[in-house]
Image 1 (cartoon, each protein chain N blue to C red):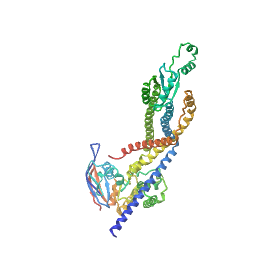
Image 2: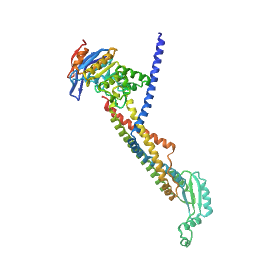
Image 3: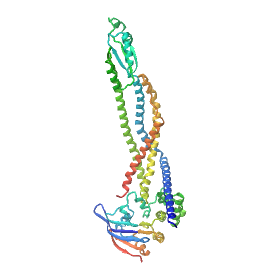
Length: 222
Length: 323
């Protein structure tokens, strides 16, 4: 699903955020990405989302070298990826329902079909009863679950998460991770950047550890 | 399943996705035009100021254009009054003068003519100057008979050609054209037209900047929203759409205000203008903009607003997208 071939990313002509990075993630895998802050986790995710382009090497997603995508194709490429952000990036001027509906609205989906999918996604994260609420009225854990609902409402083949449990207590973090495992179980490829080592160790999925932009360890699932 | 059946099913599926994509596109346009209009209504004072700035920028060139349009009507009136004066030789008597008049009228370029015999000319001269006593003391009438011609074509070049031809007729002493003032007026009108065009372009740019600046602020205040929808796969067109509608609404509102200002200003200036024109003996009134003129002004202002928004949003989008 995701192939990195000797990928390097250099900022400002001298700082190497990533260097000679190579790995291969199969379709349907669930993978953690760890490393201290500044190790290059976010850069790696930004490369997959085609927010940035590699300075060296190739990034292949679903068999395509995404560097060759034309600017007009990039939005359609991004629609196939669900993304969960640490600060969840919800829009505070609209309800939970409309936040989750946003990806479908962008695709121009019929409102009735869209509403059905939004309610299904909200049901999955256990927030169906809050669909009319504004994000500001929700707790941190609930806001993150709305962010997850928005990422999966489109049924993406690939789900990326950047520190999805960064601001949550251990119990909420475990709940969020269980949600990701559920999506993985129905075939979604999941990649989660996190520095919550204790939680990662307990979940026993494949783990890529980055250090100074290099792959320090690739620990298979146990 | 046969191959044909599966192909047919594929085609039908393609058709439904295309038509649903089209419906989605129309739906988003409708939603965004309404949403952007509501956003303007929600901040009435700010919207009004932006529209007023647009209206003021539009009123000046539009008003000048109206005045020139009126001057063009005046021009046509002046053309009708363009004449050539043919002075006959002093030895030509009245009968001979009448014969020459008939000969001149036969010319294809002459529309009408009026003969002023030497004695008639003397009478008019005395009347207009009030010098009866002085002139009656002259031993003989020094004035020649004259024929005033109205040409078919009042263009200066055509009239000059006519004058050259007529001056060769026997008995004609000289043909005079009073073209200098007509020429000067034409040049003045041309200057006015160019100035209006130049001002129109400058003030149009002004409208672009006003709308661009307003939209730039709107974009900045919705930056997070733009970034989020871009991250989850919105196209440039999708991101631009609400702002383009806002710009178009600003332009449309500004155009409406400009129309109102033009009507009010026209009424306010109508009396002094017609008084002034009457004092010159001309029949001049500021023309009304009319339906076509109003529609043109409104569409121009709407397009300018749309364009200003487009420039502002595009500039911002370029800063979001990675190279």
